[in-house]
Amino acid sequence: MKRFALYIIILYSILSLTACRDRLVPTEEGPTPSGEVLQPKAVAERTVIIYMAADNNLTDVVRGDTAEMIKGKGLIPENVNFVIYMDDNTHKPAFYELSAKNGMKKLKESKEEHCSTDGETMLKVLREIQHYFPARHYGITFWSHASGWVPRRNTFGVDETPGPTAKEQEMEIPVLRDVLAQLPKFDYIFFDACFMQSIEVAYELRQRADWMIGSPAEIPGPGAPYDKIMEALCSGDAKGIVEGYDSGYPGRYDEFYYRGTLLSCIYLPEIEPLAQATGRLLLPLYQDRAQPSADGFQTYCTRVSMFTRCYDMRTTMCRLLSEEDYAAWMELFDKAVPLRTLSSTRAWNAVYCQPAYVNDPACYGGVSMFVPLKEYEPYGWNKDFQKTSWYAATGWQQTGW
Image (cartoon, rainbow, N blue to C red; front, side, top):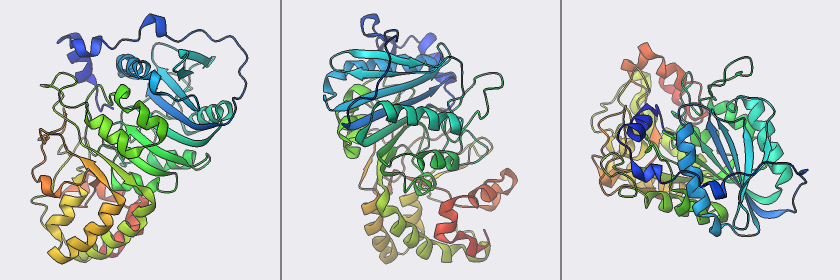
């Protein structure tokens, strides 16, 4: 979420940001001890799942976001289940039900610690939730650290559980794809985590949901303002999630530190035509390992040794294509990415990736894309890119990259 959240702890403890402290979970609404025998509920219209992989330095942030969920509980309809799976470093993993009538109630706690970013563990947890909360529709939020598609980095989630249960400290996107492939298709996948709104991630998950929602860049420490997006989460409104999230920044929290956020929603059924068009128009420029100038590309990260560079997809195509080809490509991009928001400051909250400023709002797309460059060879990024489904689908192998 919240990539390298050391800065969050510093801001919370040293600077005493009262906006975050005021969001501690109220004791009267806190989870209640489980004791009753759980039985599957009747089939609901929708089950909303919040998967919080917070067994790391984000544990303190959990309090703020769950307090916001409790604040918005009155927006949860009776025919919607709202279930929170929480794995932090202060309690054993457990899942809770949040409802307008009963508030937040602990339903089941694991008898022992486990690694929430292990594929088998995630599948078991999600299957159990769907068993007890069957529904005609499902939506899921993945909440944690993240860094997009890149193998060898914490692409989604960080679990610091010690000992033999820590099978997998971080989850790579193909593992997440394979987990979700064994579950009913989701209406939406919402990543409240940094860097996840990349075309490579979206293409990998294209058959697992209708919508993918997130940010192509770092996100602010407090993450989504959940009380502002509860209604959209419960109705499956992807655009509403983006608009509600966007309305929280800047100004909701400390405006000096949380200058804004970048967001978009991708309609995954339209991603295949976009992939074909992108390959057809872009790859002739990179034939035989050619390297067009990257001047003017909108970067979302410049710390090459720490993260790969990720460029704004639309801006990249805007710089490289002819006016005619760009117009044709944009027709497909608009279908696949029907909503992208840009903060009023044209900036986003960033700690490790500077400068965090959108230089050309007219070409901003809200989705990142990797482009191979010779300078990435020592870091292995180009070889990592070859492992993605997007690389194969767009035909990058034909270029020699």
